[in-house]
Length: 295
Image 1 (cartoon, rainbow, N blue to C red):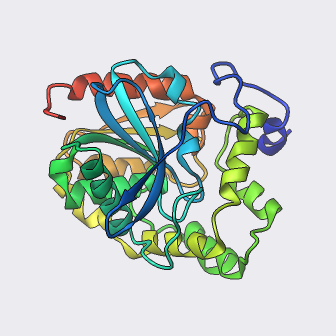
Image 2 (cartoon, one colour; image 1 turned 180 degrees about the vertical axis):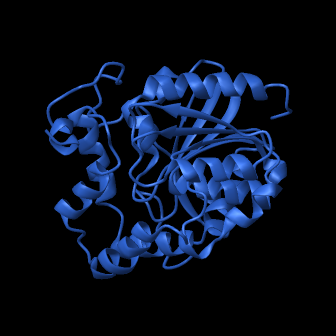
């Protein structure tokens, strides 16, 4: 049975129960001056350690919905829907990593936060790294899930961008999007949550698919990893079909003091597959960063 089929049939142990199309979290909206209107959810006490979570390409804040209930009460987590995704504003241009990173800076300003731990998955990890390189004073720590060490040398992703995405048109084909999302999994997830993933993915216009991938390929942040000074934790699934162990080794070599935790059974979307474990690892990392000033 394929992972795609299993996603329709099984609920793995440790997965957050009761996820339906309606969220238990109130969705908020903020206007970032001179930029765009962004949606987000906030979870945790107002005096908690600030954490900003950045989803992967074509996802939304709901990518982190399975993780939120498992997080310790010491964290104040903002899960963002980045530009062009979900129900946030989708400008006609501006999908370079620096644009996404600039939105996070503006969001921190809007929340009157000097620094935060930045969590990023896939594309979100690249945006987080660009933020840490360009605005190190705003980053108290990095947690990178399914992170790439650059995109230019990834022949499979480049072919996907140049061939498959070149043909993509609105409305994005359901089966195409479903196969893309299922390919991120090595273990089944709750069917109701996979429905949410699909609903959010199909909100992403074809031009944003193309432009977001272009932004990743055009930014060779791997050459600037030495500029990352924040404590960094890499979380990686051994069955990741997109980023390889070599990516993790390159990131470890480039980011001083970084650390890798491998999930033996997980794929690219490890926070969907093992949300309780990801929450625990994030909580432990936040404790390690708690000596830093994050007001």
